[in-house]
Image (cartoon, each protein chain N blue to C red):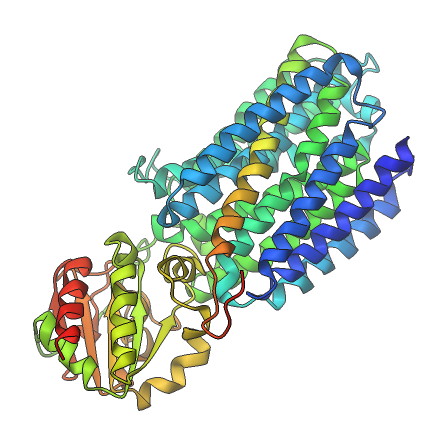
Length: 99
Length: 464
């Protein structure tokens, strides 16, 4: 298992923030809504953390809260994906017909 | 075994970043969301092999994923395109809630560990970031739900209490103190109080914010949820969460600032005051009077023009007139009229929302121009047709220093030879500011429901 602690995590935070900033600076306004929805989908990865949290839950209270965490995380990921896909599906060019 | 899990998270992280990158162009955007989707599936499936995912809870995990996924799948397929902003708010809030719930589990385990305090059990750094993520996630959850209720017209209230700023400060301070208590505690009770305070904070912050500013707030909550997910990643030692969460946090924060800038509002201003709270001083009176014409007259003006630019606003979508509008544009094109669409960054209910609504009606995206691309062209345009837009074409933003919207970037439609405005009634816009454009010499007003007006225009153009 890779240990992600202290300074290493700080580097990862910094580099990921730069990546996020750079990726979005080149997005045209017409895609802002799908992009907001798409980034909303990507933080649905929280479902993975929720699975781990529920996995290690022991008391009934922890299990209940962990269950809610997975439920909400899964809804975030699935809902985010479907609405983003639906929106992007509608963007068509007048020059060429591509599917 | 865990090497496989780690490698899967690595692959997922790459797919997320390149997926977001691919979304930066309409041509590759669909591929982008698919890559990110593959990343999500890879990471989720791999997590079943995670050493922490014990056998005894695996059925609970599966049930939760199926239930949550099915609910979201169903609602996401059913939602109308006009309702997209509030739907994004809901899914975003669920993600924030998930991050908050994860924090609750970790904190409860820390309190139960019998090491004297949460901080000692989890490590001070993990406990602090866990608490920070818990606050952010909870605020994003309750705040997003309020945002949804407001945009969906289920909540009209904009005041919970008098002097809400002071209540917000007091609540924030209380949350901070409770967080410190949780940090040093070995019992579960302060954890409960802490989450109640954090959830209340999200509600109190969001309720006073007006509907017009809500997209910026949703975008901010989206970025915050990303950050909360990133912090959870640190607590759980999970790189996929750290990277995906932080990328979304940074991207979302930039998007939020871009939106606020387009609306000529600072983020501080949106969060800590209500629109119109500042006195709209010395607004100059509009001169002249409105000149009304019928839909048929408007259609003739466009049919005999060489260059027409259409400025659609949210009112168009409310009237569900975008399909009729596209029908009219296709007819105009047969009459050799050069038609373009001009979109203000905040048209619709969030940036890019109008593009989605036009795309739904079948308008190709290369006929749609951003404000910066098209603002020079209005001078050489014969007719500008404005449907359901108001504040974003108000020349007062450029000319009248006393106006509440002074300084907001606008579409310079008044430079065109003729301006046609389709409007439901004579009232002021979303911000309550009177529009000087309507009183100009070169402006003609067509009053009526956008759907009806455009239908009549279609009939007229057909007969030409």
